[in-house]
Image 1 (cartoon, rainbow, N blue to C red):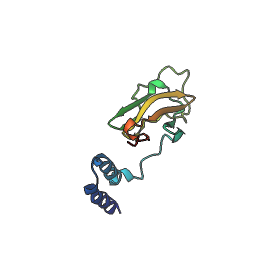
Image 2 (image 1 turned 30 degrees about the vertical axis):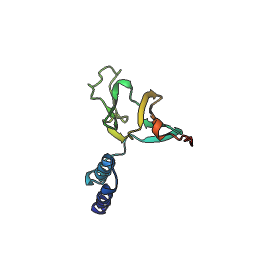
Image 3 (image 1 turned 135 degrees about the vertical axis):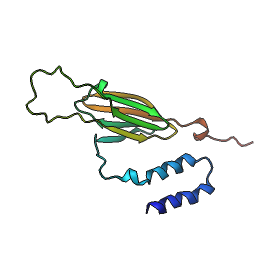
Image 4 (image 1 turned 180 degrees about the vertical axis):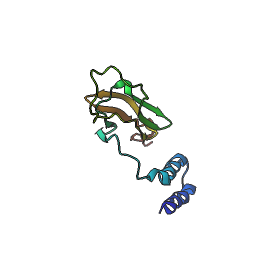
Length: 147
């Protein structure tokens, strides 16, 4: 099925102009390495549409603080990942059992060309990354005067 899906996208290329990045993105999506079932679904997240042109990506990060997390945006890819840190020696006492682990993770989201990241906030164990879809003037609805 993978080869068939890629074939459909390749058949559409001659009928479109300027959508190469879209077809390349879907080609990467159907790459077998993306469907590796051993990839963990950690950390859990929500994508919420707040208003017509505003979105939030909410990532559950209980136990992490701002210094532990890095949010970056490059080439239409939003990446949220842990920052390598040294072991904390400041805890009081000795751990007899450690059931709360802080795992290393990297979670990436593809963001549309017309969306921009407006901010990120970590509050009560929930990282909220805000996005806004910016509609260019030439794409907004307008009335054309008739002469």
